[in-house]
Image 1 (cartoon, one colour):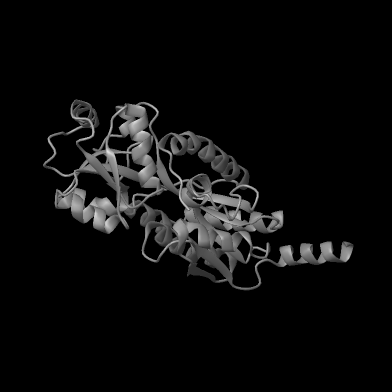
Image 2 (cartoon, rainbow, N blue to C red):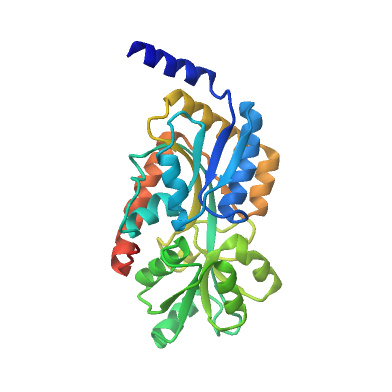
Length: 311
């Protein structure tokens, strides 16, 4: 037993002495993938070992997250987790392949990416308050789009409905692209989207931004108010964080955490995240653990009230 512990301790002290795999549980090109690649490259420089990004997409992020949950707890397979993998999926899916708290060792919260409430410019409103008034005057006439059932953007819409008392039907699309096309084409009037994917359309004037979903205004769109300025307490966002498998030695987690937080302070990383409308956070492992617990508590009543369940 002591020999095993000694070997584990020695391995932790020499960490890393081989390539690290960062599993991104979504397809290449999305916001989680971009954040993962930028941070991984800098972390690799700091640690002196390459970090290879592997996209393991499917089941709303569950396939990639489950793979890391079952991986050897040595720090060489880590996860780019999100609000989907560690808060929404565990609440929505009937089959739960992993426990978001017990099966992972938190490393660091990385960034927060705002969502945004956007409309087709032909809709006769200019503010969140005017939209709420319109939806109450003509209940169930309007629908809102999202990138899919059970996504953070779907839940952003459901939270908005719950906090304002408005009624509108949810129309799930297979990704943000098709939804944006229909919104710009006026086949649907309202959408909750990630700010980065809506940004070019807002700047071009083909979409109108009514409010960002974070507690503070987005640095990239300082003139766009927060929804919370009209609906106090409203806050949703997409977040990215690093997780290792449960049982990863604390010394290894500490090295990964240190590298992640140093990477987030690098001027090139800071500039890239600003371009992407992502707010850099950084955290201790303990703070990330508390964040996951708080997110689960926040979304549980929203999922229950909306009666969202998926196989």
